[in-house]
Image 1 (tube, each protein chain N blue to C red):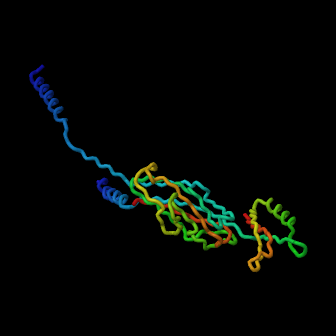
Image 2: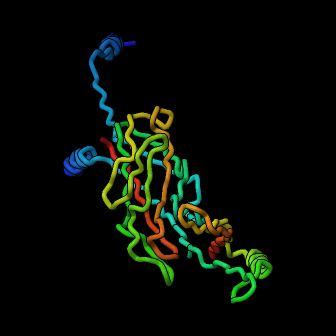
Image 3: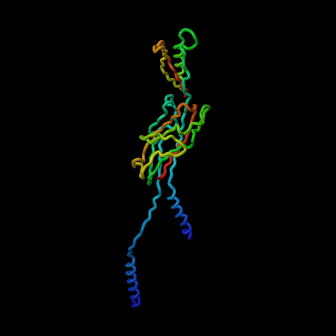
Length: 102
Length: 168
């Protein structure tokens, strides 16, 4: 008699198990570290007068910064050109340093 | 031995012979086997899920080929969907932006295009047929791309990606 009582539950359980679409879920967590980024240091060269840093000063700065493990230094050469009437009247090289803190 | 005892012995022998003759059986039995749905999904992360951007990656995005490997075992045709656990990244840090959306993450089945930009709504990453992991299409890789650009502040950002395997 007890088995007869259980029978409807067993049948319904089978029906329920087959009626539901089986689903498996997996969750993955990703982490992104975004750093401060951008040009933060553009050394100015002294020619003869005025404030700024000489090439030697800049070299010393870079040497000191490069010793630090928490910084990335990228160097980019730029050409500054002044054009007048389609003629280059002045050109000067400059260097853009991009320093990224880690 | 008395005659009556001989009769009894004879009857017992006859009964035994008749009884053995009745044990032969002919009939048909039907067997019923119930096979349940089987779905198994395995994900292996081939690259570190912690990503640190370098300078050029802010401009071009951070791309990792074969970021994940998937294997599926199923006795039904299947669909693998992907969604973000939340609409935005969880951000921490003084300058972090709380509005970086999950859509900065793009994923695609390796060898296919375009990248699917993540949302909280499931998108189909791959489909396949019944079979084990050696069945064509049941083992594959996924490429990953993150492209926040310069639009969000420095900080640590976390997002959950949910992979859902269902029977078709």
